[in-house]
Image (cartoon, rainbow, N blue to C red; front, side, top):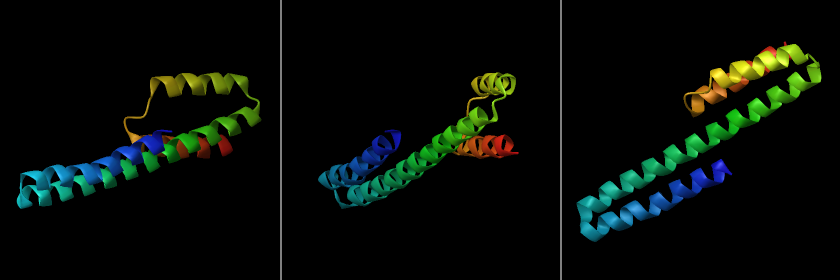
Length: 104
């Protein structure tokens, strides 16, 4: 759902910013194109990386569940609560790291 929302926001701004800019003039329209394109790229990358992070986190939890080590699972949940990701890329990195540790 977050991916769809993020892509929708980026697409909306991709069209809205140039439209608003050209209503003020050609220079502002050009700046609107740059702002809209930048927003589309940023929202697309953020949405995709957030989705990948959530996916790897889900796989990580599945692997932990299959390990049947309740004590480790509780410790891992507490650690995850204390060390929340600071951004989308940090979330992806922590997801892959957790997945690797769980498989190991």
